[in-house]
Image 1 (tube, helix red, strand yellow):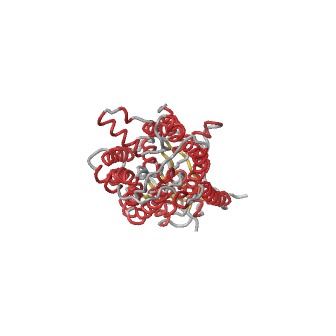
Image 2 (cartoon, chains in turn brown, orange):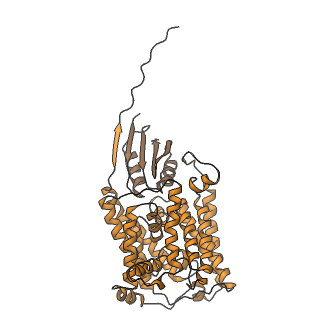
Image 3 (cartoon, one colour):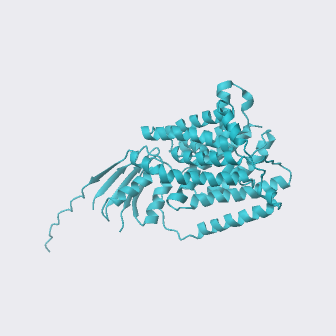
Length: 76
Length: 361
């Protein structure tokens, strides 16, 4: 199981989510995708997408002023 | 009296920021992810406000009049506005509140939106604006056209919104990850907890309803509005004509300050500089917002959320064309933009399994 890190800092919504969907399609099932983002709306959009798509969120935290990191484990 | 606009704007801006309430997201989600939570919240605001407006009108607190429908300008302007709000990553109101979060792309869009709206209303583009807006149809409101009581239309709206809200609340709910709380009590509720879109909708509905009597009392006979106030602010900057500073100007300034206060208090304010591609889209989007909203006589708030609640054809026509514009931009412009947005994906190899040391009994 490997970890993949997606940096989307500076990108406004909906791009962090679009990039996350693109990135998760490129990684093997069971791997972790860490998405770093700074668009406020993505704090609801990305977890909602993960829940909808059935990927587990293994970590979600605020790493600084208007900076967040969420880790999504790809499910089959 | 105009200062009540500042107070209403502060609450509005605060609720928009904390509720992550973005009309662009609400409309875009319907085309892109089929997530309808924010769209349902938007329809709920129209319905609740429609009840409020009907009561205010029936009790004589306010009296709203509507001119003949400038259908061509409303359709063309709203379509331009819909495309522009995707490019600018926010509608007019969204741009005001995002500017308050420190997004430099929204600062660019905001300045050009105010300037282009002023050019259309008071400046060199006024002949174009007036020309297109002179093409009218003899239609004002839905009840006037069909010679029915406004209460019938309000009832239909409430039933539709009620059904959508019911569907939203009874949808099978998957557990959505939330950030670990670091505060408690009121501070957690105000500055940390994610607000349910329908809770935000209730606050915005209250804001939209109280806006009428307060604005009327100041001499400005309208509900919430963003574009004319933004153009008036730009006009005042250029001319110093202080009669331009009315209730609406205080309202938009309040949105900016209210959003800033919310963002600062929740640790979500940071000056964020966009890449070149985003900056260009923000600039083009900002100009499109100003031109589109001026032609249409309103934005997603003034038309799609307020004129609709007044049961005016202008609001519903604008709503439809703005929604279509968003769809066109999502389909044709966004994929190109997505490819140019800088991002990196790096993969770290899996950590080696710790060596197993056999333990003898």
